[in-house]
Amino acid sequence: MKEFFKDVRSDKTTNIGFFTSLALIIVTLILTLFFYGKLPPFVPIFNQLPWGEERLGRTIAIFVPILTATSIFVLNLIASALVYKKIPLVSRMFAGTSLLVTILTFLFIVKTIILIL
Image (tube, rainbow, N blue to C red):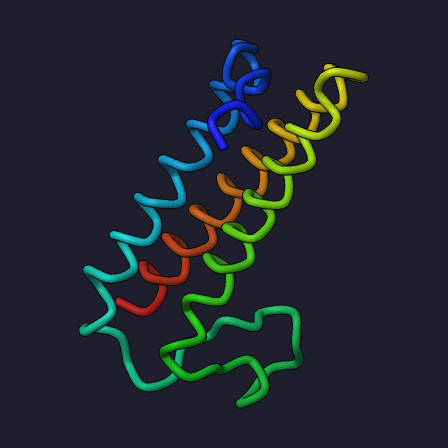
């Protein structure tokens, strides 16, 4: 398994991108778990929907963005490892995309928690 990700880890850009993404996912998860007990039964997680009850999700729905960011991270990491030997630039784009999604997820979770508390 280490051999599969060897090229991705050797490239400085992909290594920093994926490592920072993983660190932000962990920080977001810890932050969410820390404030989970203080959250109300319903949280405004679906902000694109019309005003009212449609915007609210159960408290457990606060983990949906984190799971989405984690799945994008994992898929981008695997795709990056598969493509790196042929096209390193695409591998770096995967790392950048993963980092961007993770940053936006972190900001979304922090904004939602601050809004509620």
